[in-house]
Image (cartoon, rainbow, N blue to C red; front, side, top):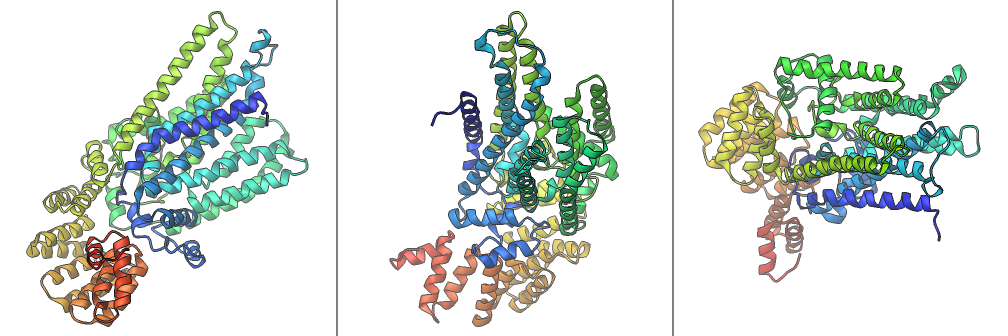
Length: 625
């Protein structure tokens, strides 16, 4: 099959973009899970295994971890069915999705730039015949630059290198073609088959929303894209038709907004910790976030998982950038440079759900929030390259000038790539993430708490105690940090201090189920089994889905000799957390004298999940798992 030279170059460019993006982010394949949201979306997620029609129904009919993202859960379930808990497979999916999104940005940029090409080449082309393809070349190069700039921006790292940030990638994977198919529909209005493109756009938007609802404002982007490609002419008839066309998108977006608000955590100690360090009103906070993401796009250094806010002078100056940039974009419009206002408007509309004007998450600022929203800046850069190429091609010494332009753009992309590779290493594992975060935000209480959890997981209990104490010092009412500190004290055998801090945590937040779980753990260490079971049951009364409390209750019941009740409790713990290898192991131990076949099966399941003692038991009997 012989392809047209132009189509062949387009396909080769798309393949180059996908391959370059994959290679750039391939370092994330060596990264581990980091706890944080990974714990809820992958490591201890009851909705991702077994992959079955019944489980898919559970994904779509339940809110999980303060959000409704069933399509994302389904993608995690598919990964788990293939890779289990091998982090490389989960990161591989993220990298592939990001590479494909870069190709979508390439196609989107190509479509928009081609619509503008006639404006840049309105006069006759006075070049030799062999150079008559230069306009299309300029457009193609600009689209490639847009895609590569989108792909290698360091702000993308959190969405790609953190397994649980899959929802940003998957949502964008459907949102980009939703924009493209609507543009195709707009170009074919009144012709046969146009309705199918419209239906396709609406369907893709629905898929994007059930991956993550943050793209709920896509209807506004459709209006802006229509202005970009078709101008402002057309009168009432054109605008009436356009408004009718976007009504279904508006309704879907509104429904997603309601679901997101209902599912989100508006209160709780974690939310209070994150908001205590942003003691400003919502309007100021929204303007600050709009501005700070622009700054981090232009100067992507000191990126981290969590941020603290600068003192009032710096905060206010940053927030004031938003109205200043808006005014500048309007001035550019009046002077004939419309692309700036188009790009800025798209950014504002796309970021609006995550800007902080309305509480939608316990976390106020995160790099992943602009995965989709910052795309207009990449398109603007690509358009600038195309425009510059067009203006230089008829000048004297055009080769030197175009060469200088190419060197400048390549330099920007290489700098972005180098920073991205460095940032990927900062997401290597939980301890690395939080130590780096504390270099950027040394007074962030939640970051100290998360570092404590990472150190505790490595049995560095002294380091964990120091981190938890530092978190409490920064935010004295941080009940979760007190609860975690109590757990670290229990691990060290310091029952007196554990009792003290757990009681203090309970006084601040009597609804914190984890405190009741740790109080049960404390009684377990003190060999007060009946009391431990009471505490665990109180924890489960507050949160029936706590797999940890359910497992610990099963363990306490086993120690009390209540084997049948323990087996039932451990089975429920496995239902809540199918990856609970310790629960399988305990079931194997209890069943040893009752049902040898069931005991071996439980040991095998524990061994397949990496339980070392189960592996040794099976190996000692000459058995595989």
